[in-house]
Amino acid sequence: MPYTDEEGNFNHIVQGDFFLGITNTSENPELAEAFLEFYFAEFYPEFILRVASDSTMTNAPKDKDPYMVFADEEQPEYVLVSYMGGGDDYTAIVNECKFDYNKVGTSMLTDGFDLEATFAQLNADWSAAREKLGMK
Image (cartoon, rainbow, N blue to C red):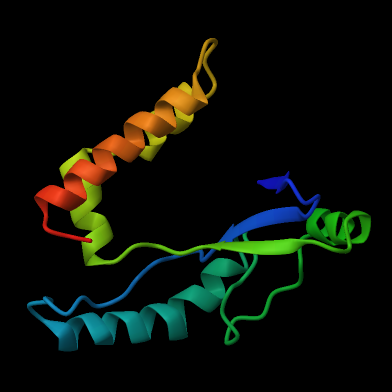
């Protein structure tokens, strides 16, 4: 979803298409690694050709969607803002807060949604979770 910041920069939020990895607490890292090797070497290249998403993998090139080509032509200068998935700490905080981004996103579509109040509550919940979990 693009947006323009206070400096007038046209920002476009992007993220990887799949956040898969092996945690340092995995009970079977060899099996997990074999799955990831299969997934990204054999499954992903065929899969990405059949969905609307662009490929984020150099081993699976894909022509850009015509809509995105048009968008690039209409807005040639933009800043990519990359969403980075969280690790173990992020997951622990989300679980402690019982944070549900789907619920927050859906509530944004309702009449009377108060963004500032929602941010204040999320910040308070997040801070409390970090303190309870002993994180800085």
